[in-house]
Amino acid sequence: MSHAAEQTQPETGARITIHVNGQPVSLEGHRHTGIAIKQAAIAQGVKIEVGYILYEEIDHDRTKHIKDQEEVVVNDESRFLADEAVVTVHVNRHPVKLDGHRHNGLQIKQAAINQGVNIKLDFLLFEEFSDGHTKPVKDTETITVSNKSKFDAIPDDDHS
Image 1 (tube, rainbow, N blue to C red):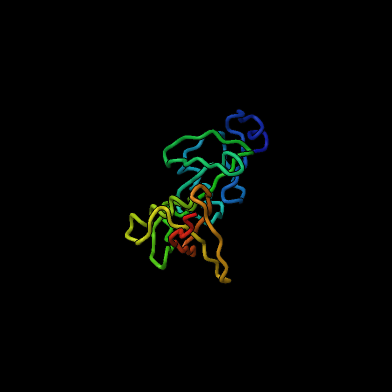
Image 2: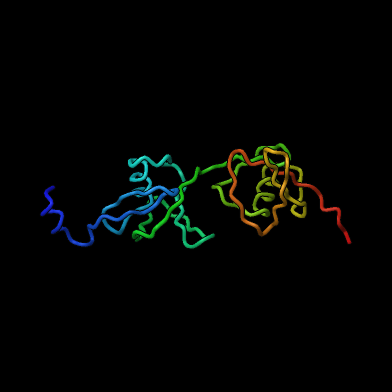
């Protein structure tokens, strides 16, 4: 396409740059489906797969799940996260499958119980790190998990 032809394109065909997993992705126009965003990102070298779950970053700590056929309006400020659809964490050394990477403590415990781990919802949850230290995860605290995430759930013995 010649330079002159590019200048006569309507604004709706303008090239914009969004970000997927922190990497720039160039798109033409402002309306795209979730699957089109993932396909463009893959074609431009972002290390994701079509089967990943796509989230639009709404603000600092909020995201919105974008379904494959859902159309979204994007601009140069648009940021997306694409995560594996299923993540396997370990709770008390038992594998627990979770949909996506963002969960709060209560959701992790509920998933573990539903998948046969012998714990209760009132147990305390601790995330284990590779260097040996642990960190408590509150029921309402949302954290990012991966296939390497490990947790201990123990009874709360503080009955004061």
